[in-house]
Length: 117
Length: 319
Image (cartoon, rainbow over the protein chains, first blue to last red):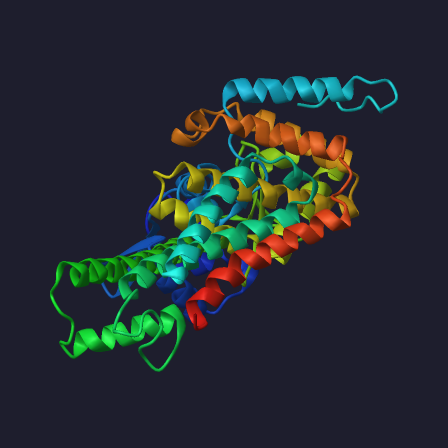
C-alpha cells in the first residue's frame, strides 16, 4: 500500500513488485494483496491491456484523518466501539486542565523536569 | 393484581434508584461495585417494565383470578395462556379485553424495542471496529516507546483501545511527543485494563439504551455515570502497576492538548460535565478517598441482587 501511496500514477502488479525488491515477494503474492486491497476499497484498479493497473483510492493522509477523527469524535455508537483515554474537552476546559498541570508541577518536593508541552 | 403492583413498584423504584445513584458520591470510592449496581438496575428495570405491561394484559383473566390459567404459573405463564386464548379466538371484544390486549402488545413492543436497540448498537460497534482494524492494518506501526501498542502518525494527542477478540491499543504520534515514558506506561496500563475486563461489553447496553431513549434524562445520566465509572475503574487497575501521579499528569496533558482542536461537535458543547470527568479522575488519583467499607459493599450487593431477583421472581413464580 505504501508503494501505491508514493506513486504518482497507477501501477501494474509488476511495477509494484519491482519496488518491493527488499521483500522478495512472489509475483502472485503481490497480485493477491493488490486484489484484496481493491476488494476492500483501499485501491482502485482499471484494465490496461491484459494487466490491471492499481492506484490508491485515497491518500494516506485521508485515511489517517478518517481513522483519528472516528476515534476522537466520540458520538453515538462510536463511544462503544472503542474506549478513549480522555474524552474530548472544550477549549476552556483544556485551559483549566493546563492550570491544574502547572499547579501540580510547582510544589518543590516533586521533580521539576516536567516543562514539556 | 399483586403481581402488577409489585412490578409497577419495582419499575418506579429502579428509575428512582438510578436518579439517586447518578447523583451519589460514593460510586467514586467503589467504581466496580457501582457498575454492578447500575447493570442490575438496568436489567431489573427492563424486567419490571415489560412485566408490568404483560401482567396488566393478563390480569384477572378467566374466572379463577390471576395465575389460574395455563400450564406455567406466574405472569410469564399467564401471558402464554393469554396468547393461546387469543390464538383460539376465545378472547371477548369487551373494552376491558381490548385494554388488556393493548397492554400485552405494549409489553411485547417494549421487549422487541430493547432487543432491537441492543442488536443494532452491537452491529454498529462491530462495523466501526472492523473499519478501524482495516485502516490500522494499513497505517499503524509499532514503536519501542510503547511496546504492544500501535502508533499512527497524527499530530493531535490521542490514545484509545479497540476492544474485541483481536484487540489493539492505539497511540498517536502526538501523544508520544507529549508524554514521557512513565506516563506512556501508565496510559498503556489503563487501556490494558479496559481490554482485559471487556469494559466495552459493560458499556454497550447503556449505549444501546441511549440510542433508544435519548430523550430520557435518567438514561442519559446512567450512560454518563457508567462511562465515567468504567474510566475510574481502569484508573484503579492502572494504579496497581504504575504510580498514580504519572497517570494523573498523563490525563491532564492529553486532556489539555486535546482541547487545542475544535470541540468535536455536540458532545463537548452539550456536556458540561466533561471537565468534571477528567478533573474528578485526576482528583481521585492524587487524593484517593478510602475505599468503601465492607458493610456498605454488602449493602450494594444486596440492592443489586434484589433489583434483579424481585421482578424475575414475580414474573416466573405463582402467586
